Image 1 (cartoon, helix red, strand yellow):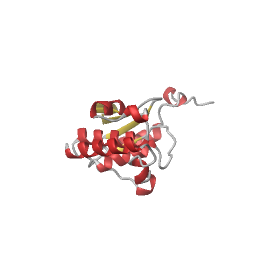
Image 2: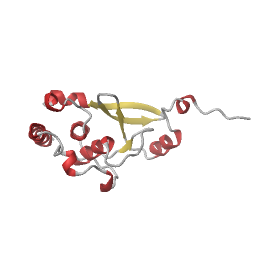
Image 3: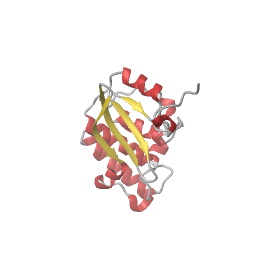
Length: 163
């Protein structure tokens, strides 16, 4: 007799074992998802196996904060992901949370971990090892144009002061 996996697992949307472990922690989840243009970060709380979205931030919100898209054009760059994490941390008001990256590959130094670094720098308590984060030079846009570095630093200071 062949056991058919659940529909969301077949579609590549849900890893039920990982979800169960995250739900057992009884902490709010920070769900990080990527699209072709943006990074989305959500604070999700689960009660009795039902998910409730408390806060949502996307990298598109950085345009309202003053992120220089005219220079880089990318709202998925490492600095943009880092700043998206900072914006989410500002909305969450210093909580403790668990990261949920879903079925994305666990790639050290990537965009997902730059969001996590932004969350931690914003004051959210997350259990993570420092070696998984991108280097400080990459997070601050040292590899990008000079104009972007200046604008990034202005925006970072603005976000940190508002907390």
